[in-house]
Length: 181
Image (cartoon, rainbow, N blue to C red; front, side):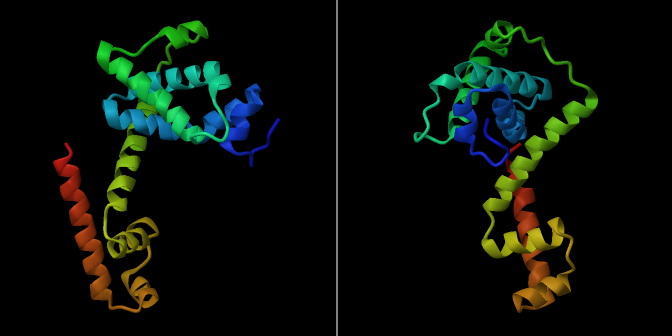
């Protein structure tokens, strides 16, 4: 049985429950965020995530090491589950039924967490599209809560320049978020 430092490929090839559980723990938040951003429905996102991992568990013997990465394989399964759900208007229940899994009842706290995961992924994607100087300034000031003067000193520039980078970057992100909704 591979340990916590094992690669995703090693975890899938091991075929034991503990290895798959570790694979699940590594990727469940990313899958929930993936579905939350696409469905705008936390309960459906949770259902699709459960179905994706159930399908991955039952078909992991098809995973081929050395081919596409394990995450690509997993997101491929997720994309098919999403397409099925969209085509039929509801999540495919076959994988859950086959494994004897019941529908997960989500609390308000669970729904809020899933929605935050979708928003966090969206924010990261917006940040990645910013120019590097703006992205670095926002990360330093907003994410790491460093003062403008300290950031300016590290970057060998003025505090006004750092403030402008943060301001412009956040304005761009706000515009893009507004345009996407």
